[in-house]
Length: 240
Ligand code: ADP
Ligand code: MG
Image 1: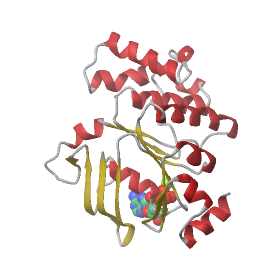
Image 2 (image 1 turned 135 degrees about the horizontal axis):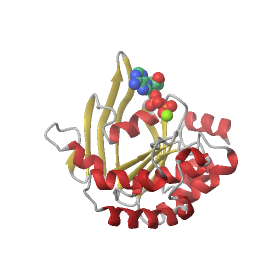
Image 3 (image 1 turned 135 degrees about the vertical axis):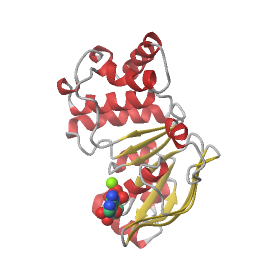
Image 4 (image 1 turned 90 degrees about the vertical axis):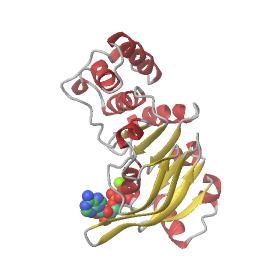
């Protein structure tokens, strides 16, 4: 579903991604881990062209993102992204947050968008918050609304960049549970996370990044019990 070949990204003189080659199959859940500054966010952001790759090829569903003739807007609609800070629209209710893009971008009717939003809110456990404003929600609730809002566009791929890093500890679980539920529906996902237990349980594949390179790409059990590289060993010693 996603193919990446020799992806590089340079900011000024700083090469942040140094040639990433990988592919993600439909339904695969990838947990992206690695030290701060290793290029995890930049990699995710290249996948939906929030950053323009310096070189390399990215294809998603056979559409080549890095070809300037590709209709990027169309491809991007198929990719949901959830950030550390939820980026909800503060002046809109939860319902309006969720229905805005489906109505505006996809031209859904108010009633169809609303029906869909209600189902999504049920799925993330917030059916009773449809008419609340974001300021009235906890961090965990906000993040679950952000996930529902992304899902309302019916993406094929979900990208999560540290979705629980801004949350108080007691709210981490409720958000991870929603993401794990999504994994079990067969959604293709890449998740940057520092939650090692979650990565181990939810991911099919661990990507370990260090200094702009994808150093290990292995099933969780092997990565956590028997990391191959010295850098991964050192990283795990610090975080486990
Ligand atoms: P991670 O998510 O693994 O912590 P990032 O992808 O955010 O790493 O950043 C990797 C490196 O790229 C860091 O050194 C960071 O300072 C740099 N970087 C990221 N975004 C930009 C930008 N827009 N301009 C300049 N440097 C950037
Ligand atoms: Mg980051």
